[in-house]
Length: 368
Ligand SMILES: NC(=O)c1ccc[n+]([C@@H]2O[C@H](COP(=O)([O-])OP(=O)(O)OC[C@H]3O[C@@H](n4cnc5c(N)ncnc54)[C@H](O)[C@@H]3O)[C@@H](O)[C@H]2O)c1
Image (cartoon, rainbow, N blue to C red; front, side, top):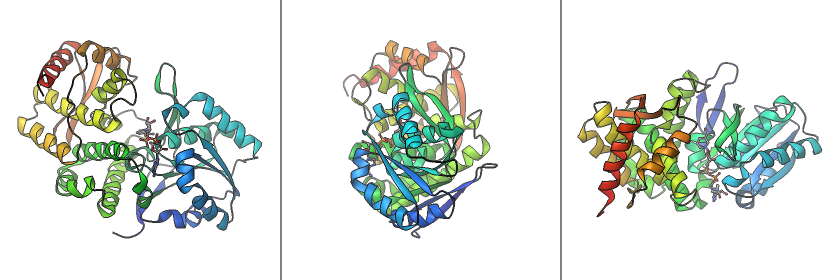
């Protein structure tokens, strides 16, 4: 693959390019200068990512002619808060960030969502660029323009649509990523492949060893394929009013597991993979999927090292967590159901059916 594969995201009035390659931080200054008239840049990161890549990126931006104001928050989901977004916009004002200036998010999905939300609010919207440094943020969260923060009542409950002017996904930054964060990204790759097509799914099956071993060429290909898929979805449904719901495959049970287990207790990728295993089994009854599809998906997830959970959680607790998810509509739990790669639909499933399947799922974990 080339050092800079460019994937266009075509959204009326807000199109941009996702650059994917090894060592792209080195040319980030010129890439950003080519799409922005900014003079000043607020460079938002977390302390972990800041230590790894902050000075390097800031120096490239300065060389390209920008005045750079680094802003750093503690790593982790706790920073995706209304209070931290408030501190950021206050800091933008203190530094004199103007209407034509730019906010650059350097980090994982937390930083992208938080900095994007601050950029969308400040002066009713200033320019924004994403430099994602986790596999999850490169394959998924940096593309599509959803930004936001968590509230006490739940995750992502306040937010705005804010498309970036550019996304720069430097595959080389992924080398320092902890294993559990790698797994989170792989679960989103698997989701994208299964929802997208037979071709992408077969590619993951063939390359699961290389992906698990974190080979850069395979990672770059996975990011390009996932971004191409997400770009197709958001082009059709920028505002999450229809097909974008497919991106939730595996997340109905996945989010409930994370909630019931206590955030952080089950890695996000493992929870989503378990959710995909569950959704496929549910699809056999509700959507006519075959047992062969369930076996194929299990094998694909196993091949990526996304092992199935050894223990279950209480079906009642999971059911109530699913009801509190903002994606439940009119009191009904919705699932993305999949019959075969590339063939899916979203459906409200009755509590009785969900409970029955959760009980079967819990029983299957006994004696594992
Ligand atoms: N906007 C969207 O469309 C969308 C989609 C999916 C998920 N999300 C959001 O994304 C967030 C999760 O993102 P995430 O998984 O990237 O988590 P994250 O941003 O918390 O990053 C995970 C951890 O990895 C560290 N890290 C980041 N890059 C690193 C690197 N290169 N080397 C070493 N450590 C590094 C971070 O400091 C952090 O501790 C959630 O808040 C979720 O809601 C948003």
